[in-house]
Image 1 (cartoon, rainbow, N blue to C red):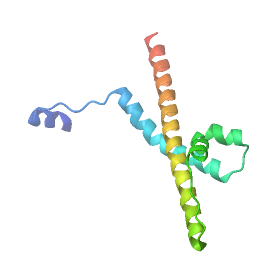
Image 2 (image 1 turned 30 degrees about the vertical axis):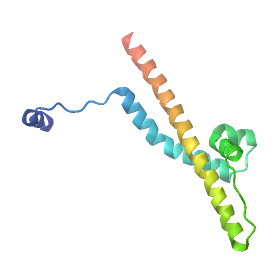
Image 3 (image 1 turned 60 degrees about the vertical axis):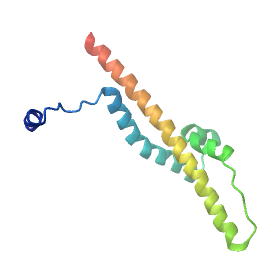
Image 4 (image 1 turned 90 degrees about the horizontal axis):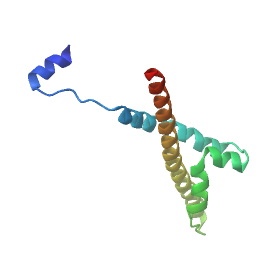
Amino acid sequence: MAQSRLCRVTGYEPLRIGLGAKRGIASAFLSVPTALIATAMADSVFPFDAFRFVFSPGTMFALRFVKVEASHRGLGSFLDALGGVGKVMEVAFVVNAIFYGLLIFGFMTMGSRQNSGSEAL
């Protein structure tokens, strides 16, 4: 009721969000906690490497491609090591978020296509 009055006053129709955009927004929101869990599992738990790299591909990517330079000066070497681990985990988290976002989007798309196909019958 309030929207119809607002439309009459302003003359604008309410913005309609398509199904694909809704799936994209939902997968983006769901990918962050999923990526956090995957990165924490790969970092904290000591499973086999195959298990770790299947559920957290960002860890494999970061360990392989992120180069950390060590220093040889007292407390600075410890702080450099912490900075290096932080850089590796940042890259791992971002890659995991992208991976799980695409995976969730794909599952949502397949699920919506199956539902729309069964409704048409």
